Length: 536
Image (cartoon, rainbow, N blue to C red; front, top):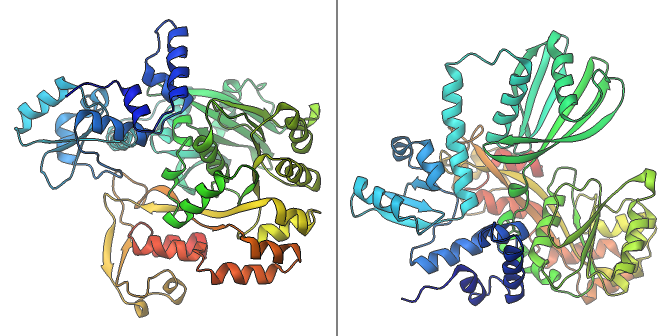
């Protein structure tokens, strides 16, 4: 069989454009060959991890195994953490006893070692490299917890802070909260959207710990009476993490929150976010339209910014000019010109959005529409042939129409420019390693939970908890609803008949947020308790 280079195979399969490959090869040459093609592709994010994995599987003639992976713990312990991390391989439970998922199919040294150790009937798969790394990180967490159980904590406060940051990253925490009580300095971690108590420091070390964080963020020591927003970089397991610090002077002393941003984790593909197939079809259809406004709505923390980035990742390329105005710029994206809000310099949403039109953009991203001026600039851009992505605070998709009207827009402008509204929430996924099922009837659960049980369902899944998850949950996915107005709906919007539009949306067999949550409950992905907590 003729060997095909990875870049050529990606182009042949339609995963990568020839222009994108040409750009990456040129950048690789400009860097004097210091960068591998795979590294350049990863930097520009021209190919998803899934796309690369599928192409590698085809190139090697190996089957592809989709995540999430159920880890074979005995084999993992036998091989050891260092081996798994170095070789980027993961033992998994499959119909074969000895099955392994690889990120690199051409690591013959590892395949030979495994066949020698486990026999010739061993089965090899190709998998998503990021998913494999996440699973190995979970194993790190387990071994780290066992190690820490028998060791004393570091005595130096600076070492304590470094160890705390490392542990938060390994546990996939997004935020670290330092809050003083009358008894101690309490530390909580936000994991999968929920705060969990982590540990407590003696109250007398609070100024020392806060000053260490201030020093890392280049804030004057002891400046506890002012509001602060700063950032620093933390290195964990050879990877850099952007840490955003926010400080407020509470009545019990300085209160600090650290937001941890992992670029590799935040730049998820649109498909990986977990939208239902019906939603996926409507969203991708809206993204193909040459102009119009696409809105992401929902409460704070529902993943609107993550979804916006995923949409940019889905459409961006060498042939598109994309500009964004954000507050703040959380992730720096290739092929995208990003501007951060700075009120002191006059860089607010509507002034920058207006300036964008002179840069001949194809796509404009507005971090949030929060006033009439910004809303009018979004309409103006959409009316002149641009695609506009933006966020808005509403509880459901159709309510975005009323919200834009409240901001001062005419119903005619709304009907003529809004092409898609996505309302969403983030819910915790049940851990595939330990979730347990139970046969129940609708009468055996609380009345509020019955709405999330499919009519014919007699089995629901519950969180149990293991060393690879947090209280029975691991990772999050999206539940949502997608409103794409048709011509009849647009006519009724123009007339201000919003209640009628809402009824039309429901009657079209719309997959609402509640119905979407029920779909995940029936599929064993979501627990009844989590559906009720998030959706209500």
